[in-house]
Amino acid sequence: LKGLILSGGKGTRLRPLTHTRAKQLLPVANRPILFYGIETLVDTGIKDLGIIVGDTRDEVRAAVGDGAAWGIKVTYIEQSAPLGLAHAVKTAQDFIGQDPFVMYLGDNLIWGGLRRFVQEFYETKANSLILLSPVEEPQNFGVAQLEKGKIVKLVEKPKDPPSNLALVGVYIFDHNIFKAVDRIKPSWRNELEITDAIQWLITNGYNVKPYSVTNWWKDTGKAEDILEANRMVLDEIKTDMSAGIHNHNSQLVGRVVVEEGVELTNSIIRGPAIIGAGSVIVNSCVGPYTSISRGVTIVNTEIEYSVIMEDCRIIDFPSRIRNSLVGGNTTLCRSTSRCKDINLVLGDNSQLFI
Ligand code: G1P
Image (tube, rainbow, N blue to C red; front, side, top):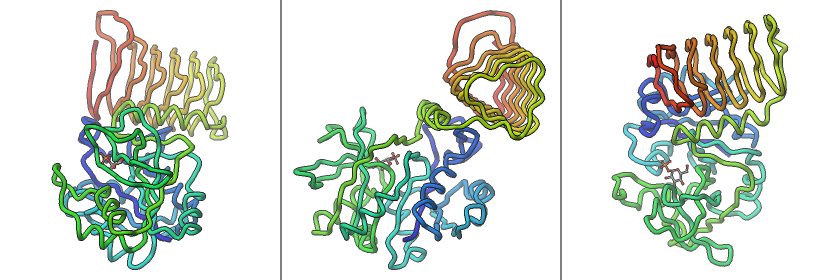
């Protein structure tokens, strides 16, 4: 079994953050989203992983390396242009050969692992196994229509969804998928859709089985999804202060992870929360459900339910920062006026004075 992670795409719905970094490298609990996907695949026993890259290839390579950190071999596969998920599969044909593979969209997060899913693929001898999960807005996903537990139809982003069962961005295929991607035509958005390729398998009598996600799953396409993913992952963390901490009169409440060289003065950190290496927090309240990346300075400020990326300076900020995703190297400072809660989605190098 091989693994194929898709880590291209433009991440337009996450601009401005994705002007300066790959969406799959946005941090959740201080680790790139992509790492969770890699670990989920490694946990199923996969040792040979292909990563499809596009414009952000250099960044993705720099973050993941050759796979040695996970004891696996990573092969990078260039997709010439973001022409759809089925096009990405086609691009990976040489890498995959005749082997079955798990395809995983690099911006998806799924809880509880995929071992059962992989086992089911072998037990049912299916040509493809697809993961389904009920969602509130099926029109934003690929959607499956089932009859007596069998898939009868798959449609990509239907205006009038036949059910609330979304296709999760994780699939298992055998080599027949390559036949399917060669037969389908681009969709209205000019992409070769994986959903259409799977529909082709169904129409042509191949065995495509549904598998229900029982655990939490998120496609981190928008800022709010990343914040939710951050809350989910932080909910599972265990207190870790083994890196040591310079604590001057501060309180840590609940489950908190503190990385190396953190300095806390007259502050309260409410878990679940993670504080990145070298960050300095003075006269502030941080958390719950907050991830502070490395090198951040926070002074006289309250922050909760947020993700603050590396090297930000947040000083004397007059409102409580909540549900906010703040890109790296951002400065948030007090000006003269006072106001209530605000919600921020700011890109790298932003500066905000209010
Ligand atoms: C893609 C697939 C869609 C699937 C979704 C899951 O959509 O095309 O069928 O439901 O991933 O994350 P996209 O995120 O590219 O819009």
